[in-house]
Image (cartoon, rainbow, N blue to C red; front, side, top):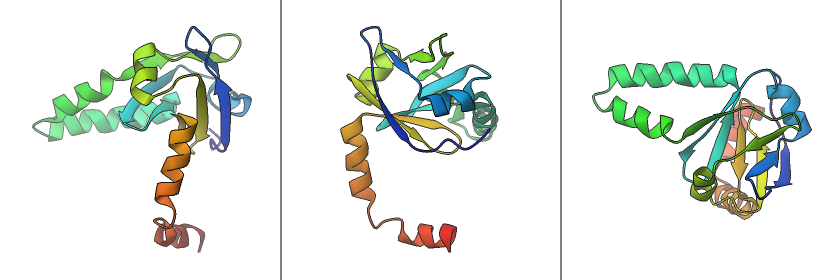
Length: 143
C-alpha cells in the first residue's frame, strides 16, 4: 500500500454518505475498511492490512492485561466495517458522526497507514495546539 498523504474536504449527504478522495480510494480499494473512533477528536479509517496488525495487537493486549477485555470491547463497539459503494462513497453511521462532531463536512487526512476523518475546525484547532511541540521529533525524522 502506498502512503496515504494530504487532506481533502468533502460534504456529507443527507444519508450520511461521503465520497472518499480519489487518491485514497485507489490506495484502499481492494478490501473492506474498518472505521472506528479510538480518540475523541476524530475517526480513523483503516485499510484491511493495517487493521489486521491492530487486531493482533488488541488480541495480545486482551490476553496480557487483566482488564484487556474491557478495552477491546470499547474499541470494537465503536468500530464499523465498511465498503465504498460503486461511486466511491462510504456511509458513516450517525452515532459515529455524532461522537466525532461531524456535521456537514468531513476533512480526510492521510496519516500514512490510515485515513483520519475530522471536523475541519477541530483539525485546525488541533494543529494550532501542537505548534512547537514536535520540534524534537521533527529533528529525529528529518535530520
